[in-house]
Length: 356
Image 1: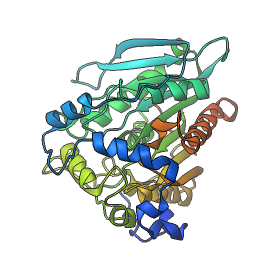
Image 2 (image 1 turned 120 degrees about the horizontal axis):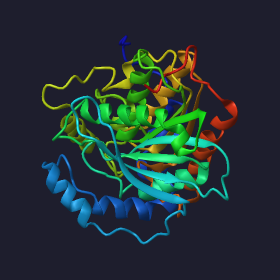
Image 3 (image 1 turned 180 degrees about the horizontal axis):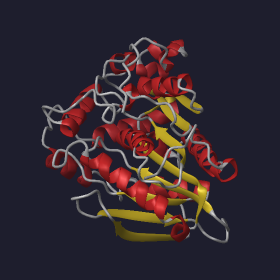
Image 4 (image 1 turned 90 degrees about the horizontal axis):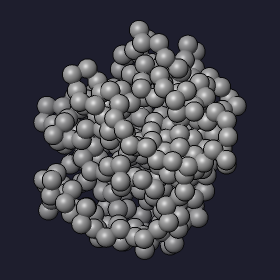
């Protein structure tokens, strides 16, 4: 796989498309989002600060109160395991199927990688998001319980994500999926895994499989260098902090981790021939420039990409689609992009991106 030098931190990220991005985050944040940001910040473990142990961080997060909210209704939920990478254990997945009366006929299939800095998060914490995508797009969603760091460092989580993508691509009929509508999606660190898994799918051409029609990346973490303008401008005050990200990257890569490996930092990879992308970024987020720069690099590589910038929202906002109108709009547009793969067919660039 060819490694391409990263764009300079000042080279065209979303911050420079919106002058207000240089204002203090408090001045940019949508006032309606403030109570949710404050509540999430209070409940989230101070990883990289007072909390440096992954198990302690998980205990704090598990003990935090969760707001009561109605879960989007789907047709069925199935729990199962799928084959893991060679030499690794099977991968637990949770499969969400839409109501067949509301969504008859073949459907998109979405392999979803949850966020949590490769350390936190699981199938339960992302249940509402997976349900929202299934219901909103009429899609079968395969939510992947990949191995987490630091117990399993790079590339374990990525290999699990790719294995789940290969499994889904080989079982479309079982999932009720259309062959031209295989999608990989993820948010935050899950967006990293989604982006890297399509790089693996593109380059493992000895394993022929259905083409990936779309990659959906929601405020993705794509560059271990962490040297963009948004990492400085939004280092604090936006729920996710630059200190959190330093700790997360350290857990994922380890002390000798290959920070510049294109599968660890997809922003530096050769992006030619990848599937089209729908990239969502939050305006008040250290990761804002990662997603915007990736969108720009895709376009420069001849890959169709849509960038959805939500200037007044913060990292993690998609989970608030039930209470924040702008988050709901972002989810609806994301789901529309997934649903469009049914009519658009194979759109993964010259030669396609193989699922495995």
